[in-house]
Every structure is written in structure tokens, then in C-alpha cells.
Image 1 (cartoon, rainbow, N blue to C red):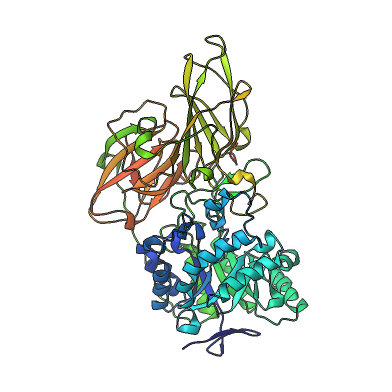
Image 2 (cartoon, rainbow, N blue to C red):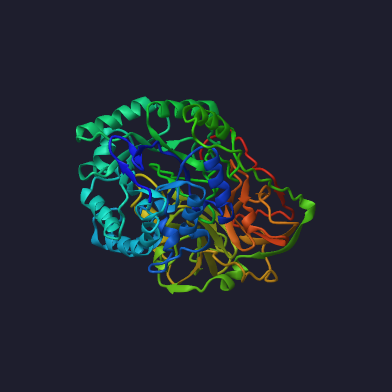
Length: 602
């Protein structure tokens, strides 16, 4: 049995050990590609894989747990072990990771008295129930029991959020009480303010830093903090950022490969250990993209988590992989390296993709959702819904002369609201503009009012993490004139299953719709959906939500892993909220990136 310990250096089986690790999030990579990504990590000469664990996917509803299929963490860790990779697992309740609400399940928001990420016993009770399911998977795979996990994390960048040491100690106890006995760590910004607030250094929990350059300066700060507390620990960067994430309406962020190689070389020559974040970024499938908190207009992140990483979104090596291979070969000549695995994506031109149907959302509401009736609108969370869209419907009476504009206001809603009167779009409002006057004539004495709201992704980091804005949908009500309208039917639309869509039900131009295509493949293959011609929405391949698209860019395609396709006929459905549709669509072999003249979305 192997051993791993931390003294003045990392020791593996008693010998000095440099951790050369890369981040691969199993939940952002289709299981059919886990081996591909892990192999390419090992082929670089690295020895360790690191992953977060997203609580919200593993417990999508309170008390209902899922560790199968794409969420089979055990299988992912075992595949890494079979390739000879050690593992660092970060199973903290909060993961950040540019992931929806930092990985916390949205059903926690229904309890307005609970304070997540704190010593609040109600929160800790829910973490304990989650850990009862998660920790047995991890503990039996610890190096202390013959497995490959060498270290686990207590909390993630907590020094950028709070300083509740009792909370940190409670999370640590929840782990150790369930059998975690490998070394524990924290990771924070490498300056004293973050380190002081976010670590348990006086409790002998190993302290690491997160940064992407200036290793000498950052390690100096980290070492000074260690020494201030009487520690002579090795130096490690738990997140060495080799690229960055992207947001709607902003140009793609890239990092020069030679610059990365030089900065990694600097860190390793200082004797440090490293975890590259990300090694393979992957994809925010479904509704799992996060959001960057800003003072007024929060900035939602795109579906692709390519990250300009060492492997691209497909998992193939980029120029960075080859530059880093040279660094490893020079500094660690004993490291075993190999040629990387490379997949080929396919192109399917528009003339080989057949339009097979189009149907309206309004015409299919009853097929997709059972309405909830209430006097006033309820938030998404109070409806028992976490992600996707919610349609609010009522009837309003005309109180002004025919042809005169009525005043409508959506009070306290998030993130985006489309307002329809008798099926006609009269306004689209975002974030800080929700609540402004919508003036429109009502076509009849009594008119149907529909409001389609979208949760575009909850913040994953920063001061708005617990803000009421993280509760989605309509939270207070809708005013017509000066009074709140009553008598609402609310249709939760998480779109987890769209098989009930009736494509014979009809569609009204300019309204939200489902457009269905069919394409044929000789064998399963990677590809990219070119969403040009559509406006905003999500796409489904063989019933699986592969993520959001939006015409504002910068990424105009959606990645489809081969594991979601099949030989023969395949179904592609686009749920389009803008009424922007096309009768043709194509699949391409690489992503399409659009350079934007202006930055940001207003």
C-alpha cells in the first residue's frame, strides 16, 4: 500500500514528490471521453488529476441522490487509477468553478431562514446528509485504503467570502467523521487577507494558493503566511490559471502558449507543485453555466468552458500541451510521456439535415408542465424548480379607453422577462430593467398576459452569492396600472424532458418555439451545432440539453460529444425564445468564434 504525507515537502512512499496535476471536471466531460482526457493528462508526464464535486448535480432534489452515468464519480476516479494517476478531490459544498450557484443546490434557496456557507445548523444538516452519500465513494478510494486519492479540500476560496472558522471546522469534522483520513487542504488567493480568513492553518489543514502568474511573488506571500504560523510546508498552487472563462457579449479570452509555459517553468523551478486549472475545461451542459456578480448588471457565462485550456473543449491537445510537454521533459526527465490521443469531429452540411417539425411553446404548455395556481406569482424556487424557464399567465382587464396604452410592470424579477399580451411580444427586460414601465394597448376588454422568465445562471462567486437576486422568476408580482394583478397560472419549464412536445399543435410566428431537425451519422462522432439564424435558447441532441446559445456571441456553436450521438438517425431540437427561427441548420467540425466590436451586454 502506498503512502502520502506532508512535511517540509510532499512525500510519496517516503520519497520527495512533486505534484504535477491538472483539473478535469468529470461532470463537464461526457463519460465516453473520460479516458481520452485522462490519458492526455498522463501522456503529458503529469501524475495527478484534480476534480471538484458539484453538490447540485448529485442531489438535484432534497434527499434524491444521483451518482450514476455521467455522475459516476467512482468510475472516473477508477479510470484515473488504472492510468496510474493520483487524485486530488475537492468535495466542498461550494466549488465556484463558474458553475451554477457555485455548485450549491438551488432548492436550498426555498428556505429563506437558512444561511448557506456558514455555521447555520440547518445548512450543516443538509451538508451532512449529502456527505453521508458522497463520502463512502471517496473514503474507500483514499491512498490510505489502497486507492489513488492523496488529498481532499475542506472549502473553496472561503477567504474570498467569509471568515467563519467554526463553519470551516464543522465541514472538516463532517469529512473526518465519515472516514476521510488523507491530508486536508484549503485554497485561497495568495495574500494575507484571503489566507487569514479562509484557512485552518492553526488546525494543521494544509494551505495552498490560487494564481496564474508571478509564482515567485505569490509563493513568497504564501511561504510568509506559513512561517507566520510556524509551518514549514511545501508550496503549491491549487489553481494555476492557464486560460479564462468567457461571458456572453464579450470577446473570447486567450493566453499565449509560450507565456504559460514560461510561467509554469518559473513555478516548478522554485520547487513548487502545481494543479493546472483547467487541463480540460469541457462544457457547461444544460443550464449549468455560472454568472459573474457585478454592481448592477451581472454577467452570465457561456456554455463552452473551453477556458483556452491545455486540451480544447473536445479534449484534444492545444499548442499549450506541446509547450508544457517540453517543460516537463526538461525539468522531470524521468516522467513518462507519450503521444496524445486526438479525435476527429464531423461536418454535416445543411442539405443533409432535414427539418421535421416546428411547434409553439404556448401551444404545448400543458404537454410540458402542470400549472400551479396561486393568487400572486411565486418564485422559481417556491415552485420547486431550480433551472430553466417559468411561464406566468393571468388575465387582465382593460381599464382605459380602447387604443390607449396600459401600464404594466414586472416587480422584482430575475433574470430576464419576455412579456406577451394575447401572444404578441410587447417587451423584453433584463435584470436591472425589470420593473420599468411597459406601456401597451390591450386588444380586448380582457386580455391574456404571459410572462416568460429565464434563470440565466446564478452567481458562482462574490458578494451577491446570497443576494435575493439568486431566487429566480417573479418574486413579488406584476402591477397593472398601480395594483398587483391576481389569479396566476404558473408553468415550471425546466425542460428536463421535451418528448411531450406535439409538433402538430401549431406555432405562431414571433413566439417561443421548438424546431426539430434530423441528421444521420455513420457512427457516433463529435460535432458542433452552428446556431446562426437563431436568436436565443437551448439545444437538445437526442433529448439531452447540450446548453444555451445566444446570437450575441462570441461563441456561435454548441459542442456535441460523440457519446450523445448514435449511428443512424439523430434528433436535434432548438428551443428558441426570440421567435427567430431558420428552416436549415448545419453541423461543423470546429467551433465558430465571432469577434465583437463592443464589450459587454446591456
